[in-house]
Length: 252
Image 1: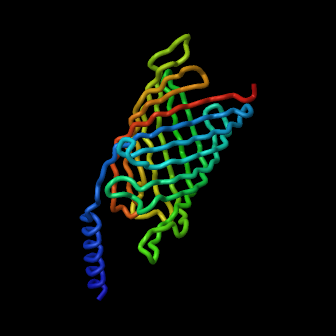
Image 2: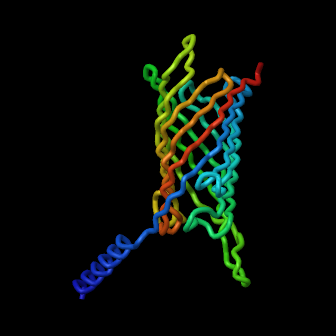
Image 3: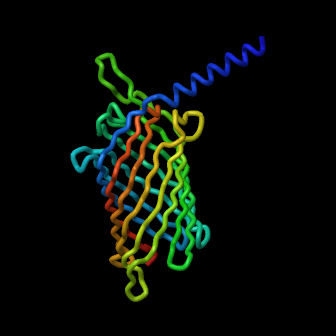
């Protein structure tokens, strides 16, 4: 009897494995353009206030993809390590065919972050770890057939970014033009993690230019991969990101 139960369970596991591995995941691609701003404002020797915002478009500028705003406070714990706490508000639009969302989807989340930066000659390496406590709007079909945001669902996401920065052109010993190369992975964690561990992955490569110590432009190519919550849809999006970065010291 015990042998039969073992065989029966093994057969069920085998069929389950074959079903999940043979399930046809829909794959799609969108050509994105992201307009991005990041500003850091030094308040004291160790404390800073940062503000980040972006407007993202899919398939050129023909469809809105997403926008977010992201304020945070950052504390320089040591010369190489800083900690941050922040808040983000997102709105993800209906875009692409097929689309990830049935309707425009809001999200609010709080996050904590640690950033470690070290220098090896001219090469600067950044490790960034962020834990996001997300509240995602969930759409529910109404009696008239339309979808509306019915409630917010808690989800936890962990992000790790590895970024390299290397000077290509200097003037008066100050970097003007520099190269950027990196990767960022987004992981679904916890009891409500969905059907896939991976939420996103971004391969990043580009250039930056310092106009002076306060103003910087970056132009990056990002290969963005997105897996939806049910792991039935995967996006593979070639993306162009234009970033304007500011850095001000308000103690003066």
